[in-house]
Image 1 (spheres, rainbow, N blue to C red):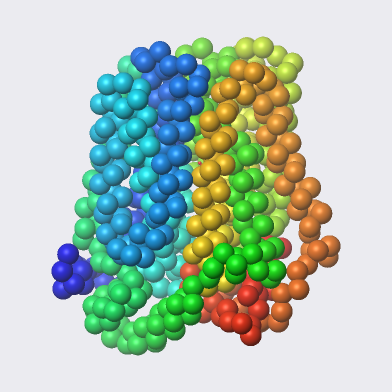
Image 2 (spheres, rainbow, N blue to C red):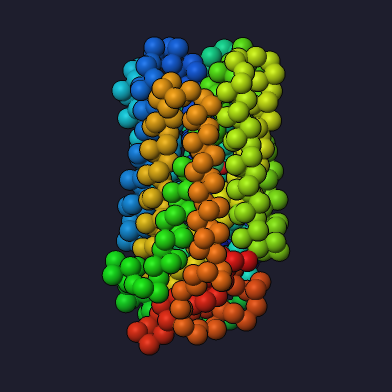
Length: 493
Ligand code: BGC
């Protein structure tokens, strides 16, 4: 697309805050599709298994194909968005979402279904890395925090919409409709991205200063955008000295790296996606007789997930990350332990079915106020600018990889160990986070992080600043500490 058009598209109706809201809404559709395409399989799986006569291993592969694709998408997403621009990558992402939805809906065989799900997964991986960057780069600094959090909310909205669609088509076993309907939001997403401009930051980076200025003038509704342009240029100059793997393993960064990768793995090995992807199967094994009933109860779990994510967004800056994490993880341990115990003492029954629903809701609520949003928030804010891309990408890849392993093994674990031991295992993994956190808590092992106070000024400014406000992030230079105490302090708030 010609440079002129990139800016021109934003010049018709969209201006200022209105532009940012519309852009946030359309780009967040990328998050909605991510949630929809991962969540939809939970209800569809029961019917896919029936129609194709899948074995347990084949079922796991149908569910996990998307995660394999997402791991690949997450690895290549950052680099592609830097090279071709955020907008172009998102346009391609929308096209892959659309094609993947249609291909999986019409799949004549399990192999084609699996391949289409891997393709869809690539779109999910691209969207999980590029949408937050697009959102943060078009929003004004003061709105960056909530606009980026909107992405996680959109993911949970996608999951709950998928559950409702699953329920609507359950009575006719319409798994093809369940998978195929994702084409509608993909079309809206693609159309929206076509009319939205490239981000000013990417335009400046690729030397198109005049177009960047025109875009900024429109979206900030002010002629005076020189300060922002200078900030972008300064932060880009810092980024020129890109962080390397050696920087990532630097003594001062290592604690933050361990926290990021640790949370990435723990977020998954505590079992969240066994519930998100397999809830109807869990509920059927607890005693729900009809597939529709199990899918409806799953929709309730999705609503709780969505609602509690809003609660987390409201609380996270007030209550702090650490208390929310500890309370949430405690809730996850209790609900998983009760679930494990109930499966241990009772066989399929009405009572067990309802205990399972309550436990799954309590577990998802606890996850949604803690590990769910806080993992994504922390990896966006704790790393210094120079290594941020590399560190975030590595954490996201670890997250998708762990998700893949858990989803690929869940049904086999259920078969070999039984539901009780499987859930006890996830409870144990959750217990490990608390143990690790208590053992490495403040006052025990604090890294010596130097004296950079530049983001200590105010609590409220820390999070939004760190959420990709690259210009105001502490610098990383040989003479300055590679990570500021404020970033580590974020973990203790
Ligand atoms: C996780 C996803 C999960 C979702 C559930 C996200 O934070 O990364 O794997 O499916 O939460 O809401």
